[in-house]
Amino acid sequence: MTDRIASSPDYHHAATPEQGVAEAEALFAGVFGGRPDGVWSAPGRVNVIGEHVDYNGGLCLPIALPHRAYVAVRVRSDRRIRLVSPQTRDAVDELDLDAIGPKGSAGEVHGWAAYPAGVAWALEQAGLGRLPGFDAALWSCVPLGSGLSSSAALECSMAVALDDLAGLSLAGTAEQPDERGRGVLVDACRRAENDVAGANTGGLDQSASLRCRTGHALELDCRDMSTAQIPFDLPADGLELLVINTRAPHQLVDGQYAERRATCEEAARLLGVGLLVEVADRDLEETLAILPADVMRRRVRHVVTEIRRTRDFVAILREGALEGGRLDRAAALLDASHDSLRDDYQVTVPELDVAVGTARELGAHGARMTGGGFGGSAIALVDRSESTRIAAGIAAAFADRGFNAPQFIPTVPGGPAGRDA
Image (tube, rainbow, N blue to C red):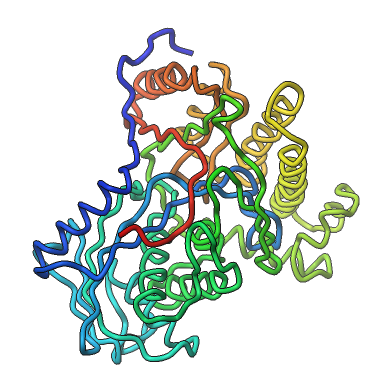
């Protein structure tokens, strides 16, 4: 690895709630005039471990980022929706709530507006009543295209805003969330992304944005979407999760994601189960021997071992502080997760592998890619006192290889969607 250390890594720090509210309110006033009825926000997410197991019924372990999408909203007296973001302030999207429909229908919504408009549509489709029209201005500091769920943050901020403004009383507050009601909002946001935006998602991102809590990771059982809050107080342990946005293109639209999902579904059929999680406790070698093709065996090996790793990681967190032997065991699980994603699931790219490998060489307590892969972000569990040094070393390694300069996001577990003003 290079001995040269970059002098100033590129950091993307979260806006404070006050800054986020001010930006959303200023955009709203500049485009629509006057003041909104309120400002709501929701976080992006990063998955600590449990990758490509959601659609196989396994456990995932996301945390909420401190980076959030803020939406300023004012109710209208008609059924019109007007939507604006900093990138579209000169071309406001105007829609009719009575005309919105799924992708491919006559009411198809194009572009980013499909996400917030889709939430309103999905809430009505769920039988939660007739919603009022609204004007909404979005301002977000969740990095785009980094695999950190900027779209889910937008959906979930819109969901809690409409929940509040329409008197649905589903979300509770960020401090005292209504878990059952938030589950309803998760379903609406997932349906908005699936049906209106046309993106394939299983609810992990929306669950994290609506249900994570400060200082905790969210144990999400993807068989039934049940959750548990797992203590993950990184500052108390002198740690930080360094998110590394590789700025490699993050695209799941070229068939790679769909191919892996289809392979897992076919393997489950051949094994006589509905989801691969059902074979996670069987003898692995005997299970793999049933499958006819090497690629399929490798995909299943990743899924089964990743489900086991996630269970083990949760067990470590339940034992107590991440220090000593517990920290070493957690690091080994993170490392093994990346190696499996690289070798068996084959979803990494050179930028992800370099980020992970360099972080390990420089002393991280485990590192892995996070998200769907094929670009996007990696994470490294680091001592807070060493974070800047490790980030500088990764930036230097990228520069030596001619990669785009990475962006660094120091992260501790944040709170869920809620009202800010």
